[in-house]
Length: 257
Image (cartoon, rainbow, N blue to C red; front, side):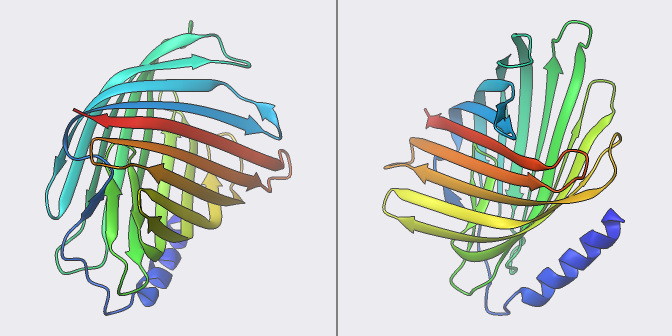
């Protein structure tokens, strides 16, 4: 079923691509390539009930080229909060974005394995994401913000993204497919992107269902050495057994040195 949804979303996006929107190179925002320090605080709520929070601190290295950007990060991830025993996991992040020359498409992806240290459940946990970003106007150009794993474009754009998580032992926790309409704007040192669309979810434990999801991403930077950002990601779950609003709030600093 999810393959059919992918084909439908890609067919619709291909029809929406204007023939005048071409990308000569991948535009980079935020910090430059080279070594950088990434720090992020993330918290979540399910129907106003707080979930466990996590703090990530990773040392990274980024490579920038006209068509391809790559970032690699490694460091600890501190888990604490409601319904969670405080612990420290160790995580990696590999992220990249590619704009094929002579096209308007950006292909991007992330792979984030982590060694979970929860007593009685030690082992490898994995998260992965990949997608397409399609500018919808001639003035839009694909962009990539290294260190955040964030792909965006100025003006209107369409993003088709798939994300999955696998718990210790390899069991699939969820698989999301999310086509989103987005709009990006920039004013001086401040940039913002807003996205919204359906979210199709599958998992080993639950039946497939469709959510409504959004994303607000705000970034502030006066130079290419540092960047502050805040992301708010609401999702309304229509699943009959567990309906309600899920919210994720992230904020952090990326510093290049």
